[in-house]
Amino acid sequence: MREVDFSEATLARRWHEIKPHLREDLIPWTRNLLKHLLETCVEEELEVYLRAARHKRTVDRHDYRNGAYARDLTTELGLLLALRVFRGRTAGFQPPVFPPLPAATARRHPVPAGGLHPRGEQRRWGRSPPSSWRRPSARAPSPD
Image 1 (cartoon, rainbow, N blue to C red):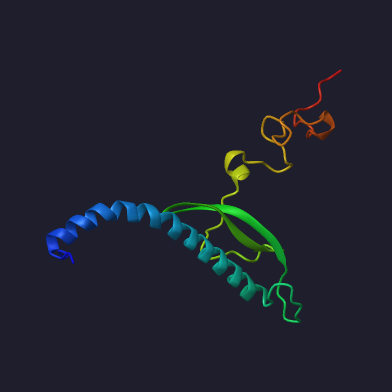
Image 2: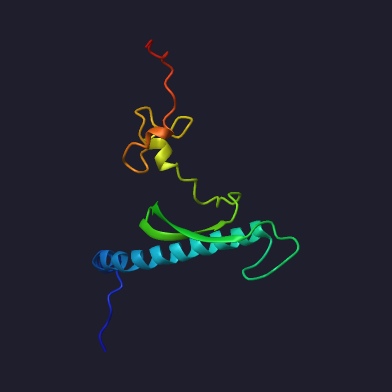
């Protein structure tokens, strides 16, 4: 039978050989586990908010389920792709784990009252709206 050397130098050398491979194997597994944990927590928080479990009817129900949306989250383990964030029918439920997303359209293209941009075009279609939609100009009518 062969003796195994358990000296500190041998253990340290073997640990440095194994450590990179162990990290490569454990990070994706840990990332998937974290994703599952976050999705489960958000679903349970929604049940507490709704005051009803999935597919259950109660008198105390506060709101109704309205599906889920996908959201990416950056963590120390890397990017968690397509986390399912469940939502209620009204906009009252906001999971505390995720801060609300900024409204992308409001950030890029502020829309003044009336729904038209300052140049008189509507960005949603990418072209100018019909002339009947434009506001009357503030100029005085020309004398004819």
